Length: 444
Ligand SMILES: Nc1ncnc2c1ncn2[C@@H]1O[C@H](COP(=O)(O)OP(=O)(O)OP(=O)(O)O)[C@@H](O)[C@H]1O
Ligand SMILES: [Mg+2]
Image (cartoon, rainbow, N blue to C red; front, side, top):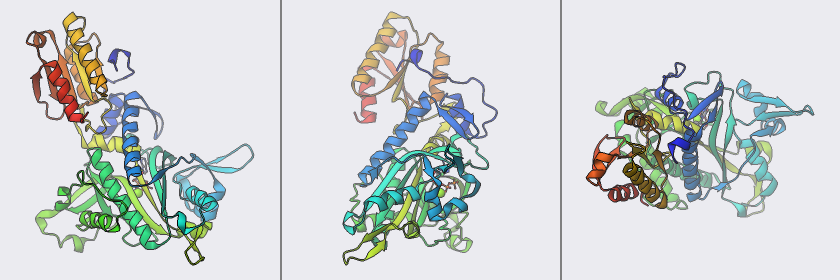
């Protein structure tokens, strides 16, 4: 993409309504525009990041054997009456009446609808295990939408639902989700710590929230500092292996890590003092085993091998896809702007032409642009007639992890400059070597 042809409405002023860095930077970098409280348009740069996160989530879900579907945003109230949640959900649910007077709602989550799909089409244990998921807009009429996309009213979420014959199988599905989530967040360059969460009326150990540590997080968290040393890395895991998934769960959840909702001071104090940490975190996902809560209420049964009809065992598992855009920025920024991790960056690298209109500089930029594009990378070429300072400020603000700077002076010596946004370190290289280095960074 050439910046002269792109739509990147950056703001010079710091928007006064934004209280936290990610919200400020998303507005300043022209990623989003607010349309109503907690409701945003995604402008090109923001949309690209959102799509990158969505793609990673899809890939990791499918790697774990989970099957994508797409359910609608609007749902019939009758389904929710079956589970009893239509009355329970309260004012967070946006309720709508259609022209025939039928009660509808904008889905805040999809347990009822997916259970309805299941009961219509699945009747035998032979069709299990099954996990269906989708990535779809949700609406929750939050009392206090704030912090931009972090706590929106309309937000993009991955929600997956497992269907299993037995409790043991459903717990394996739970573990499988935990493993796939660890992988998912790490691929985005984020550390999200699974923390024991509040199981609500069902109780038990079978819900974990994933939290990204950040000063601006809404949850207070308590953990053993050893937990931040754990890395999933690029280990290969057999998602069908009960033992392998269980081992990862144990590795990542055996140390103390809880939010204020489940915090136990006595247990916490058993950790050596120098390892006790109290901090804040952003919830970017949650996994939940709830057994037969919905299947019993809604008559979703399967025949077991003895021919008995039994309610199917279920769980639901969410990832806050749009919230992650904000969380990533909270965890990766400095005074000048955003610093995208390579896994989610909207463009792989920026090209800054210091002297637009100079034949040699223009030609060198074109050659770089073509070579990067041919390698399957997406560069953003700042080809505007602007001062170098302005170009650098824009690049720093939008946070591309790598920048190639091209100017007549360097070209005289046969070099361009490759700069890391994160460290600020620069290296002078021949143009071909700069392309090779960027390719190497992205593994293409
Ligand atoms: N209002 C929102 N705006 C953006 N993302 C959200 C919002 N509510 C939930 N999410 C994201 O969707 C994920 C799955 O939804 P879940 O039902 O677990 O949310 P929740 O526990 O109600 O969230 P919270 O406690 O933050 O209100 C959450 O982990 C979070 O990342
Ligand atoms: Mg939650």
